[in-house]
Image (cartoon, rainbow, N blue to C red; front, top):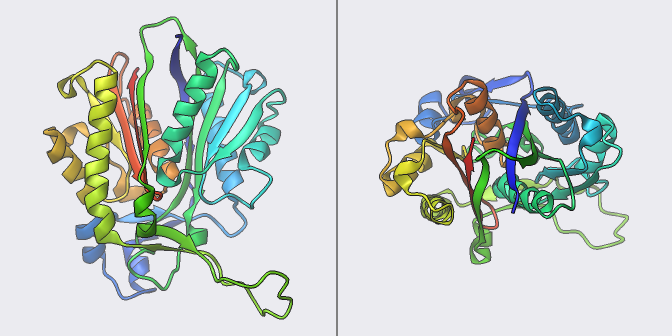
Amino acid sequence: MKNIAIKSVGHYVPKRILTNHDLEKMVDTSDEWITVRTGIKERRIALKQEKTSDLAIHAAEEAIKNGTIPASEIDLIIVATATPDSGFPSVACLVQEAIHAKKAAAFDVAAACSGFLYSLTTAKYYVASGQFQNALVIAAEKMSSVVDWNDRSTCVLFGDGAGACVLAPTQEDAGILSEYVHAQGQHANLMSIVAEDIKPLDQNHPCIKKPYIEMNGQGLFKIAVRSMADATKEAVRKAKLKISDIDWIVPHQANDRIISGVAKALGLPKEKFFINIEKYGNMSAAAIAVALYEAVAFKHIRKGDHVVLVTFGAGLVSAANVVRF
């Protein structure tokens, strides 16, 4: 099988910053409470007119600009999102048109916070098979559009943003070495987006309640730590490496205490984990994509490093990839 490498990365986060102090004026909470329990200090919030597709397009354009493969040579676009502009068309098709990737196939993947790694694995095998030559993988979320801003237990957690990468075959001893994807549908009730139920064809209904996030934080915490630790171990085993061979772990940025729990479960120092949750909060699928971008851009990840990307999300779904850069 061909080695499939991450050739370039990009990202985009909205300019508007919503701090913990701003949230103190909106709901009954405090900067100290949020920081101690989550590690989050601020998050980015898209403007009303900014759509998920806009965030995705910006991230895609940067990933292409940072590499050597032009948009015209991209023949597969996969967008991971739980917050598309609408049911259809897909965000991926909107990206295709915006970046003029005229020969690309395009579709979205819905795997919540694990969407980026599900998409990365899907793209890897499409390219490795020879079906496609160059793939653009994007994770983009406008979580602010599905947050109940009166619910202090969830509104403090989420933010908006997008990350992207370009995949292509390589002759070098590098690339995506292994992957692990898993689902535990029996825990689907722990986190979901719900909306008011209405009868079909009910023209007298005054309004449809906006979909919003509901979650069982305590239930998620325990499963998240175990799922991410298990996914890491399995992906490292499949890559024929040891945990001690890993230079960096880029985890899903949901909660700093979850990351601490994963580090403990793996017996690794937390210094090996790239963390940026304090700036962005949980951007669902985009969280790990933006973290990967920053880890590369800030030169934490260097050529030859073994890196684990690991995540969990609503579904419940978990995933991990081992990448040699």
